[in-house]
Image 1 (tube, rainbow, N blue to C red):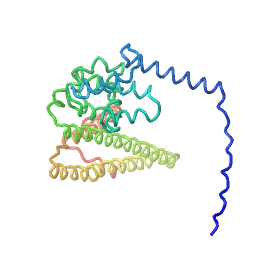
Image 2 (image 1 turned 135 degrees about the vertical axis):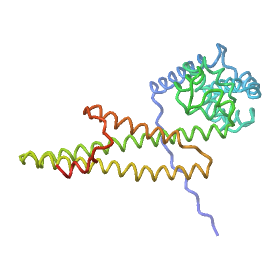
Image 3 (image 1 turned 180 degrees about the vertical axis):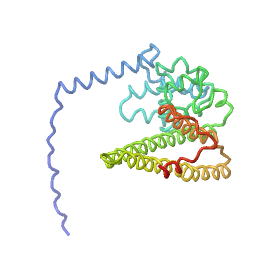
Length: 295
């Protein structure tokens, strides 16, 4: 059977890149390269072989040396053509690209102007723990190096922990912070809803006799107070019970977190008492709901 004559591929017209745009891109790349060389080049001209050898040397050393290796990887990446850097990492340095990316991220993090002076203290924690801490704020890490804490942990605490324990502690801290934020947002929403309901009640009772107004206001506010009480004794207790079960199963202690929530509620109630100059309730006085019914 005769072959079908192949048709020539259509010619694709290419539009040459505008000279000004090309020049602008080249200038931008040169500026970026100059910034990287100024920060990480140690005042030396770019030389691929030297940087590869130095990176290989520092990779075998301590966590602080890992940051030095990361510096060289940053310079290599900035100066090598697209695709060449990945080949250097795989074939000449013998490491996965993901590892190289983490090392560069660590160098950018810990050798930033804000943290560079603290890097030696933080590097004592080791490479793996530096990777675990990389997501923390620079201000928190700076405070940690100066004797403060991150997630309630000091440098000494972190040094004694395993990397797995540190990862779990940081995860719990983030989850607790998120939970507290959600609690505060929910409380703000509930307070706004209560205010709106009081505004509606105020408009409804306008023009009525004073004794009726007082009675309806007390009934309205008592209902709101009962709702707050039932929520704290119901849903909050239920949540605490779940946390207690989790603590028994996983060996975690949530009491400090729970105490913080209770303390926050106590502060809110105390601020309300202070704002309205309320006297302390005497033990032999009638419950507030009884006073509301008698009004």
